[in-house]
Image (cartoon, rainbow, N blue to C red; front, side, top):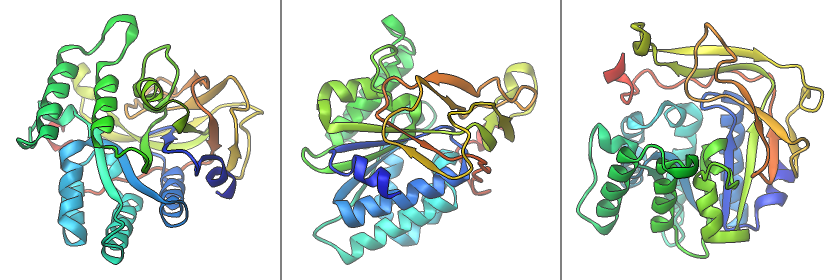
Amino acid sequence: MEALLARVSEYELIGLGEGSHGSYKHGVFRARAIKKLIAEHGVREVFLEDDVFVMLRIEAGGVPRVADRMNELQYCFDNAPMRNLYTWILNFNKAHPRDKVRILGADIQRFNVDDISDESALGKLYRRCAKYARDHKKMENATSARDAMMAKMIQAQHKAGVKAVLMFHNDHLNKSAVHSNMGHWLKKAYGDKYVVVANTFIRGTYHGFFMGYTEGLKNEFQDITVHVKDRIYDAAEPTFFPSPPAPYLWEGHGGVDKRDPYKEFKRKSSHGFDAVLLINDETPLRPFKSNNIFKPYY
């Protein structure tokens, strides 16, 4: 923990990536790291890979409304470690009314299901970005339209000079220009003020969502167990590498298929990351049963 904090605490934008959307140990560690970055290093913005306006509702509702409003988030942000973090931040804000921490979203995907944006300048930008991402799922040179628009939403909400933490999957935070992910656009906007720590693991079990409807099967959450032989990342204790120890790392995604555990668990390039956090023997991150975001799909 201390090595990680020393590596990233002086940057303005701090990307803390995840090697899967459903890893419990990493979720707990990352929440603890963010609390320390707030309390000891002056971080005052926390951006999530989730809807802009849902996050604004959580921030406005305060502690009494956390439980129900966070149920509108993606499962990776609707669980016990995240509720603990939201509550901690909101209580911090009550104790420091002139030095509050913003809890913010960057994603625009919910617009296609339920538009809860307002008529503010941010709302108008949100709708433009959401429509663009919907109509241009893939741009030239394999650029992700969604990633480009999430970068715009961060730029629109981020206050210059304020330290911010970004909680996203590794792939979105990656600074490499190869696929022009969100991190690429942030690197162009903020240059050396932006640092990214990727998360990885080679063994353990993580939680994900199986979209079975494409094959006439049931949509459902599944636990996926993996174990890759790799001497570089073979550590029993959490390990922080201040720079990537290999030209690659391992990661899963939100989508899973227990018929083939390695279908979505792949070796990826470590280019575009500044450091790597390894946490092996992972256990599944459990969303609350009251989560609403996936109910229309299963």
